[in-house]
Length: 129
Image (cartoon, rainbow, N blue to C red; front, side):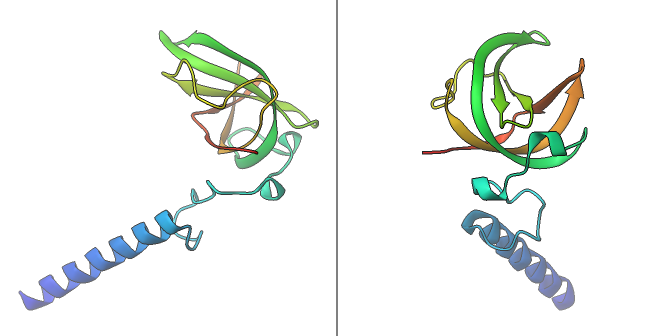
């Protein structure tokens, strides 16, 4: 029984260590998703990505609108970086403070294509000053 308890304790401590690293911006090797604080210099061009790529993009919002998507309201915004554009879609949202036309931001998510249009659903985002 002592062995099971000690292995359980090791599992718990490694869980908490990984959680602490994610929250404090530690090592990016734990989960491919710890790029929320990515700088614009770490972003790549929209045109350089293929369907289903996980990417970090930086650009300017050209259009923001609310449209129904599958029976649910969705906030849509067109992000343009000069090389191309992508539609950002936040499902279930009618408004997000700071998401306005002309605003620069950095986004991270999985790029998808539907109806011949590039989209990122519920991307992580960071507003640029």
